[in-house]
Image (cartoon, rainbow, N blue to C red; front, side):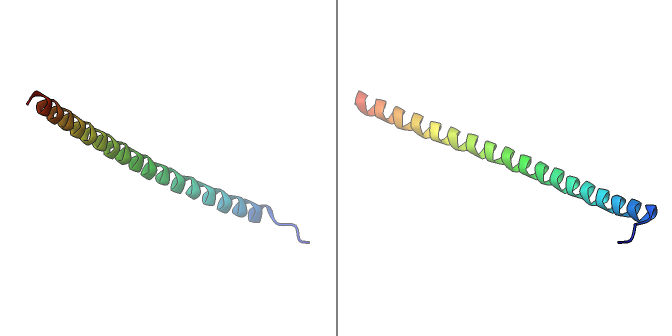
Length: 69
């Protein structure tokens, strides 16, 4: 088995380090995308909850008006 030179080992290390740094950047970007999707889903969920509440209020008002008549 040949011993690798210091330069070869340094190059392998630098390549490995660059690869891991790229992975980190990709994961950070993916995390930002997921955070954005999460926010969008939270907004959509709140909108749906508001619509549901609005519908419940309309139904309740209608029920009260029918009871009055």
